[in-house]
Image (cartoon, helix red, strand yellow):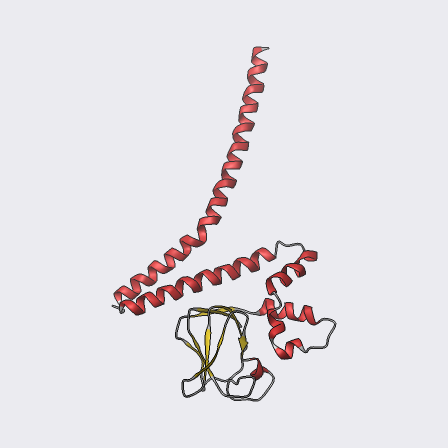
Length: 211
């Protein structure tokens, strides 16, 4: 009888070890997922630091480059994660999730808002899923008189000055604003305001666009 009890006890202990090992593996995988992206970003930033140091880049420029790299890496990884995780969302719920993420930002673009179609919202969501993030550092000229207005920029972080060719600021764009949409539906050769005035755009902070 004691032998039978010992066998049962050994089997129970063995099963316990297997279960504990499985749980420990899950915990380790979860921890790895949490720290994977920060470690990857740190490795990338350190490589760039070494390059900038070796090139004897001035401190102010060095700091600006590193700040932009951190933001760009973080946002690109966020968008990749979002795309990957959306693949796990059940199809019936995916449209609702995209609507939540979209937050009607494309409805602010006049020619899209005026679309007359029963599928308008689905068209908006499809366009939204095709948009890619772009990051730019402070003081970067996003669109100049030399650039063709063949892209639409939707601002999702930061602020941008709208400037006349003489350098005067006429307005400031903030999160949710856009520019470049007129060039998609016209033959204009320059970026224009809604009033038809030729302008340029300059970032007054680190900015993120969807385009």
